[in-house]
Length: 185
Image (tube, rainbow, N blue to C red; front, side, top):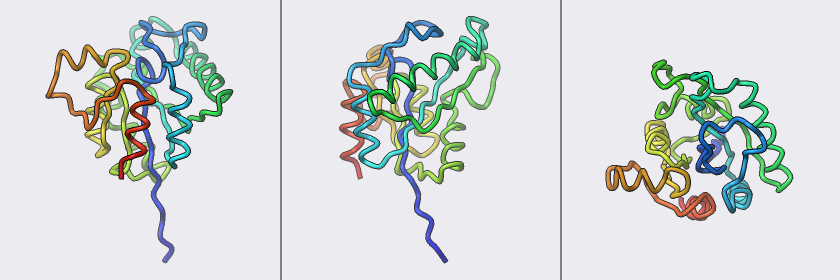
């Protein structure tokens, strides 16, 4: 019987982690990468990780912008990253209003489980990186390790939750988080 090899992945929150936090971002011209983001993704890829974006997009559910607007932002973001040689394996998004009680909005681990099933990812060897407690909880619930970045809402989350944050590590930004991740066994 042939042994199936499992892959490792890093799941990234989008706003405040990979790109600068902008309230209900929905226009390509408002996309700004967090400093060092492309270098972080390339470092993770060289270390053998698949890379996915997992993002809550409540602005769709609230009627602030359309799914088409979000898709244009994602195409633009992927284009900017690929010009720098930084590739994303997939994007999972929740378009629901926070009160919709869907099963995909973070802190739900649904998208991490979906990616694990689709791409044969071992979640125990994977990481969730984000700037909010809900990102960290999503990773934890999936059995992955979680890293909080101080960008976006990260500093606010540290002030509000302190020791109660379910973080395995707190990093200055995405590049510092990637540096920590690649050193883990």
